[in-house]
Image (tube, rainbow, N blue to C red; front, side, top):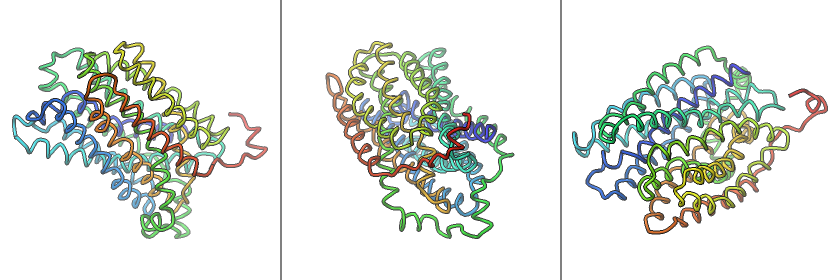
Length: 425
């Protein structure tokens, strides 16, 4: 289990590195470089528009790779998704700017971002199921939390690289070539990830399905026919986690540097510190999920997010590094309270024959609702003077929507037996 968990963590870290490095670049430099004829606000909105394309393609990726996972095994998904995302990310770092090739530059950016999302849409389902279907029932939450640590690790890698370049290069050097370096580095990371995954075994549950010929013929059709309500509820439930995370990590970076005059380096440091804390807390929150259940933690996280949005915006508006950091920590702790247990919760909601498709589609549709729209909406409602209270209102509404969806979902934690209750951790 330790080897499987480490391989899953490494894979999701690399995939999310690829995804997050684009978000940071969109907040910092892509607007002026690829949309120079737009106003600063319109350029930022356009850059976030290309950022959103990656979320829109993620459900399609979950359908394609989910079909592969449910028909041919979880293991092939891990290789194909990582390879696709890695190639697309390296290619982003090679795209000429608008000044060199005109309108073809943002078009290429859109296509490559679409491919990034396609690969990531398959990665999460494959990595999580590889761990969940090997894990003992009484520790499933803990073991599946390791793929969930991957996104914070990927974020820290992406933003740590950006921070180092931002601190060591002039603005002109960063805009000319510095922002491309993290994209090129994705090639080396993808190669390392593929090497790590060569020794992974297929999951016992899929082997059983294959041996008894109980695999779904068309998994998506079964999910739509038999589990459509569950997919919609899980998408709505997860929306707040995406909204909170990308408000902190993407929108606030653009807002503080453009409107509050905070330096890139300070903002990246504040955000990275908060993300690091959320990563450390993840396995502990997952263990609480094993003990108390998945649903109670999800409801608690939603309620905390709803209550913290206005204080977070107020702390951000101060432009004081320590206060902004505290605001981000509170927001990301509410986020991780939910997402630490999601990797166990979603697979448990779906039957094994359509699990790869159903869990991944629900997870990635939540990203469209909460992740794709949030930086765009937040930027649009925050362009006036004064604190951006509209952002807090938007986040509170998403949190209440997710709270209602989680309230309608069942608990899935396996009933503890006397043996498992007495077993050591």
